[in-house]
Amino acid sequence: MASEEEVIVDVVVVGAGVVGLTSAIRLGQAGARVAVISADESVDTVSAVAAAVWYPTHTDEDPRVLQWAVRTYEELCRQAGDGVPGVVMRPTRMLVRQRVEQAPWWSAAVPDFARVSPPSGEYTEEWRFTVPTVEMRPYLEWLRGRLGGAVERRRIERFDDIEAPVVVNATGLAAGELCGDPDVYPARGRIVLVANPGLVTSVRDEDSPAGMTYVHPRGQDVVLGGTFEPGEWDTEPDSRVGTEIVARCADLVPELANATVLAHVAGLRPVRRGGPRVAADRAWRRTPRHCPGAGASSTTTATAAPGSRSRGAVRTR
Ligand SMILES: Cc1cc2nc3c(=O)[nH]c(=O)nc-3n(C[C@H](O)[C@H](O)[C@H](O)COP(=O)(O)OP(=O)(O)OC[C@H]3O[C@@H](n4cnc5c(N)ncnc54)[C@H](O)[C@@H]3O)c2cc1C
Image (tube, rainbow, N blue to C red; front, side, top):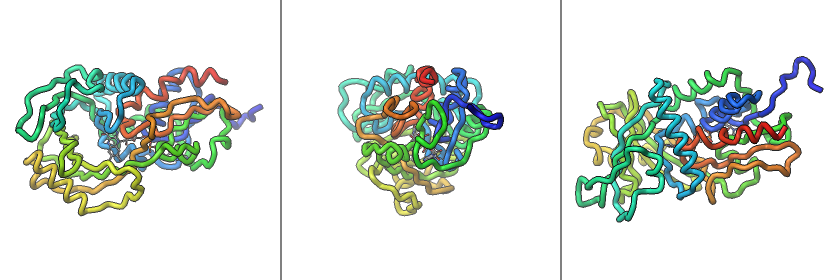
């Protein structure tokens, strides 16, 4: 029996990145009493580093991911229309180098996806589409405001130490160790932030022989990318790699040639061999819900992944 001072909760969400905060809000909307524990402030998570453009980077075709991506697209589109801080719909030009027979699997989620002629012989075709992009710092702050209650700052060692009928594991890369899941690993991403010279369109040349190249304008700055480096854990800035990223982005979008560099940033994407794992682990004393390694592009699926199962999770009490 809980003492009067104890707060009774139905669910504890561990993690206050985009997945944890979104899950907690959606569980609360479904009627659960939710508490959130996080080792870090939301602004210090990988989520705060993300370019956060809706796009399933390095994600294999998976009907579950497509379903989550569709729902997240719709939700972020609605949020952009409602003026939620940091969320805007942005036109994209994607330059394709390989021969493709048909539109990519994820295009089913994007209403205005179109294949057009390439701008030069280097490319086989160009894809044009409009997708939500999220400036994560104001967006995470907005999510924190919607959450209402405080986030308890604490690093947990084991899920069994948490007193709650249901525990949602939204610990990103840390889920690998916490769950003993050897399939979870980091894919380091390096990006450079530069002052925005007036760009509005995202441009991608992901298979450039010079290295993965993307340009994502935001309000005041532009995210220049990037790298996708499986197994690399070091997040110290590397100005040499950053200089190369700026050079290839300026080749792609000449307006960037003299853009002022604001910051070199690195973060570790949580990736999982075999795809995202969203499942209840019923072998446990209580019924924790796992969502480890939700993916290299969890901003693209965050609205739908764990929260969509919230009713089932609450019923396990
Ligand atoms: C350079 C870069 C660019 C990216 N661009 C995009 C993009 O354009 N589009 C896209 O969709 N995705 C992008 N991503 C990926 C995206 O950032 C991640 O998929 C997403 O942020 C993961 O969110 P998360 O909430 O699962 O994890 P995180 O943001 O890592 O949050 C994990 C949370 O768990 C907490 N935690 C961990 N261990 C413990 C513990 N033991 N006890 C308590 N709390 C704990 C942490 O403190 C934190 O609050 C990018 C990533 C990088 C690095």
